[in-house]
Image (cartoon, rainbow, N blue to C red; front, side, top):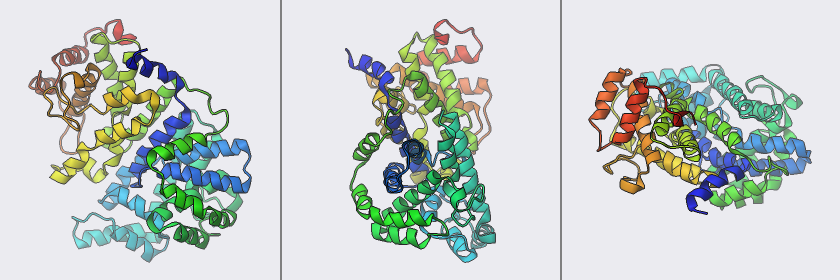
Length: 461
């Protein structure tokens, strides 16, 4: 069997745990956490579950909730940016390190993360607004994150137990959490475990295992379930060991810890459902990218169909288009939503996002070729694209399709620095790139699609 055929065949043997472990990398980027945070939290949470003697069905829900706990995060990115004006990822990274529910503590956190280019007066106003009533507005945002995440989890096909754990991860034992203000035993046990597990990993990353355990125990009865906070002391060695694992070893450990009988082997339909779901997660990061990946998928498949691609090749194009911008979760909204030109260092951050797309998707064995296609959507025929400068045979037709579709969608939709362009203007601008930036064949197929010519049989395959 050829390497290409093996990649097609492997779509039928993708495990659910493998997909979620890989995509959790993207969620780590959204929160400014070191790669592997969600996976470490998963292994820590399972250790806590073992100490509680959690039943197998509850443990299964917990496993998936720990990997998906941050799936609602990107939908709050634009709001955090508007509120603070700074890097929302840094705010998310630092917020768990302190108890910011009092006015002065909330003001201190806010001042460290408001826009550095604002005047001192504007920065003080932003900080005071955040600190009002002990950061209640920020708590509401955290609650909305849980609500959004629970909805996404249900849309991915998971049950109410997983959704409840994701929704309740920001609840507090003393009833001062969000979104529902649940108290004590009212909070689902899986949500309580998620809260402690993620705090232990964040705190251990910043200050070491001993300090992490001390802080969690110090918040027992307020933030955390006292029983779980006490059990955290048994995990000191585990916390230290996890810090020494690279992302590949972490992914292997998470796969090995997957629930017994885990969805057996996942097929293409389930893989597509997750791809669609995560496309929505990515596109929710900025109002300027709403539905972008799904539009890209629809347009790319139609272009590819006109070029004669069929069957598995069309599946690859669709999945690559849906997931092409997953690496963009690494880019702060202060850059994505900036109304003016980017500074050179900001542009370098943007140019890195296809690298992150590749790095994330390569962790899924059944998506190796999809990863290569998805990460090539900013390449150009003449080799001057990014991030690898591909040209010739290294820039396959499937990737050329994505590059053309991405350029088109960027032109005809609004951006923070300009309004949407009319279709005629967009086509004219792309014609200037014919044969240098954009494939002539892809451009002709794109023009036929947007000008309303009837689809071919292959388009509908």
